[in-house]
Image 1 (cartoon, rainbow, N blue to C red):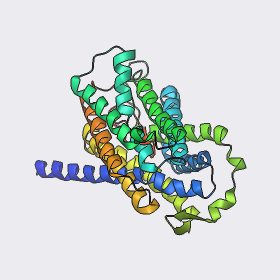
Image 2: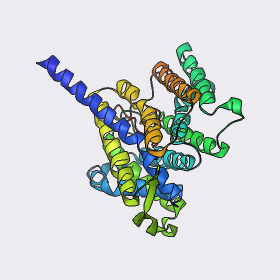
Image 3: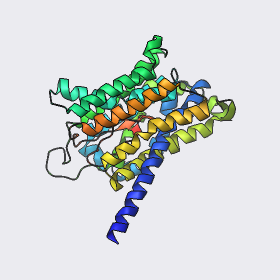
Image 4: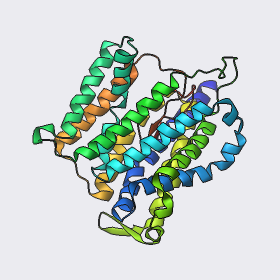
Length: 341
């Protein structure tokens, strides 16, 4: 009976992890038509984060003690994992294909290991080094360096900025711990509460940066093109806010609790595959055979680097955008989704 219950719980956890990966993977596909319809990428990010923050307000109120107990944690999550990752990611997909942008973000595990090895001067395993080499080599295939960098350089740099924001948050988390801020053995913060306040902080930061009062709100009442088909803009926005943000984060958190950060992180690697497939079908963004092979190599390298990395810090680690992303325990339990995407 006990074995059967554990199996059912694991199966449910895997299902939720897959649902989270699908939800996160669809963010770029839904956002790109809105951007092409005339909305500024920063305005789309603001709509996504602000809308999700409003929905999560009851959760934030329930965990209002976090504001007093972990202000630095909430600020870091909102600034890096929410505002930074998503702003860079949405800006990048306005210039390069969705799948390419997300695959560039998957350099984050390699960048984290670079920080550990060369900045913190801590040893990394040989397998981790192999993962880094694979990820970089795969990325060279994705961007087709032999063709003289076939993609928009600024778009690639923006996607790399999203990866760096994930690394920044990972590094920030290294200063945290499972205990309370004073090391008094207090319980770690509730991960859903951290997400709720991260969205609120991110919305506040993006409000200053994006200046939504200058947005052409009439565009939301119009239609946007989805590979030749016209769909209501508000429907795409609802997809981004409800499915690609709220549902993605919540199911991601629950899946980590039912599985483990490591297992959920493996499933989260499917986000890039899902995003690329959806972009292929819904946006007509076809990738060449070398790019597809390179994408698989990037994911393999990211997985090896992540699996072979030293035990991650006990603080929160968040990913994407859509995405995406660096996976690891957030005080033991935070989602791998990417805030990235």
